[in-house]
Image (cartoon, rainbow, N blue to C red; front, side, top):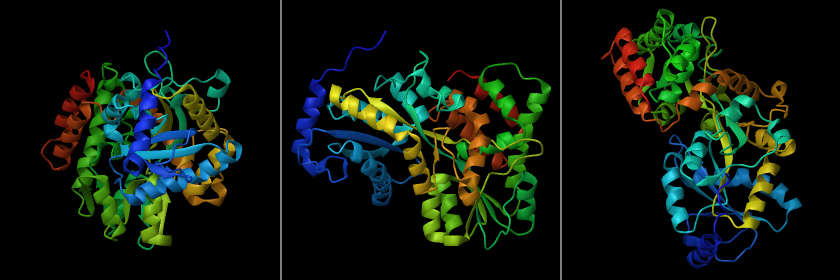
Length: 422
């Protein structure tokens, strides 16, 4: 049964509050729109920033630049449409949107990670995204699966893919490591490497060591055979072995690893495509980008972020129409290509958009990373970023890296944690 239509009073109350608050609201004007002036055709957009992104003037400017490119083209078709956006911590988005809904200041549209859209849907803060079967065909089924709530409806519309890559210093490292063994060989030859203890920056090694099927079975509560346990132990043993290497450093979080890389004290780190612009500003042409190292007969399994557009529940009927029109415009081939080529930090969610990999090593690496990450989609669907098991897994891996747990003992505890109900 479809949910009842949202009452119009919160939207009217929000409009009055916005006019009263003027520039004090946590919304940044876009495309010439001023908060102190009543504009009837405004799309209010809330953007989630991940914990490895610092919400500051630079980040807001980056979002504004990206949206200006899309908004300018959109306004050629819908000249009366204006945009305003605010940036909020991704891991606090449910609570923030709950508060803003109570005050009548909820957005028309949200740009968030796929699992955040699901949490918002489960909390009743966004509506399911209405989409026809023929429109669904433009997206990868594996990615759509990450967005389906228990009732089978979509929590959001896929927009962009942020990939996980290997970043390296071209002046220090002529060729990036293509395998786990090459990575360790490079450290033995004097090249310092950095890894983050952030769980989502270590999952790529699960695939490279051949342990991904065992992880999936454990999360699903299926029995594991000796070969599965051996695969899990192999992943954990590789991590502990890497921590014992003189020139491999594990950092408590990804921003610390990136700071050391930018300072020239590391030759290679895992990185996300969204930080490439910041790294280029510091490193220039010395920045190299490549897919994460595979294993012997196994591909890396980076956790690539799927960014989606979700529908806020407080929109007026006209606001909902504007939100839907802009959403579908954003996934058309021309717009998707503009977003991809204009930033070289994201890939299109529309699978029919051809990415010119021959003309860009960065785009080629991102496409390879996207293909690597398809195998991790089932795991990402089962273990969201707010899963209560993640802090326990994080603690276990930290103990392992610092030698407080053995790979065999950690395997038993890992299975126990994964098989526990979240």
